[in-house]
Structures are given as structure tokens and as C-alpha cells.
Length: 186
Image (cartoon, rainbow, N blue to C red; front, side, top):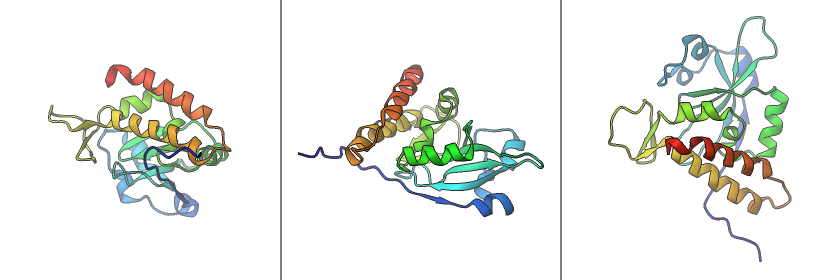
């Protein structure tokens, strides 16, 4: 008997390489609710559009950090104001996407855990929608960090069911590392 998927997961991807290398920056990339340095905000260009679940973000993107005369370009993950350097080559990014079956939130398995926590703990959800501002009051529906960890748990439970021929030990171990470090903030 085949195990049943526990909750719905989704995914998908598209690439915008030419646009990221040759065109002007998308306006939404200029949003800066977490007050990142303006140099970082102004030099990110989206090359990969990832499907993100349940309205938490419409903008899970792989981005190049463009600097004149610098190659290869540094890769960042952008998700509703969160900008985290990925410390991987473009080729490694593509391989990680494949290893993760292009599931929503896959990039969070590959970013620095301390940055993941630092940037997401300041964001909140109201009725399932990200509020693009740091926490300013106590009338919270759900801290975004908790929501994100719940989503990563759903992913690690369901990927082996959906793709039994694949090995997701990395994702499961990485989730445990994230949960361990995030525990004081949940």
C-alpha cells in the first residue's frame, strides 16, 4: 500500500537569466521592510522564480547580486523582503533545485540558518498573509518563523512519499538543524 501525502505541497520554477543579466531591476525587489543595506537592495536581479505556497510569498526568487566587473555573480534568495546570501555557485543552485524537486521553499534548506532565523523571526502573518514589516505589536496571528518551519516539516514528510526513489536525508537533517537553532524563538 502506498503511503498517503499528509498535506498539500506545491512547487515549480522558471528562469529569467537574460532579464537578470541585462535588464533593469524589478520594482518589487526594491521593497525593503527589514532595512537591508541600500547597496544590496539596489543590486539584486531575479533569475529564478520559485512557486511559494499559500500566499506567504509570491516572490520566492533566486537573485544575482550584480557588481560591475565581478564574475561569477553572488546568489541571494529573496522572499518577501528576506534577502539571504546562498554561498553557492549557479551550478550548485541548479543542482540543489533538482535535488529538492523544485518544491516551494526549497532554498531555505540551503541558506545560513542564523540568517534564516534572524530575518524571518521579525516577520508576521495575519490571516496567512505576510505583513511586510517587523513585529511592532502583540496582536499576532502567527510568527512567520514558526509558519516557515511548519512548511518545511510538511515538505520533508511528503517528498519521500511523492518521490520514493529519491534520497531526502539532507533535507530531513537540515530541518532538524533549523528547528534546533530556532527553538528559543518559537
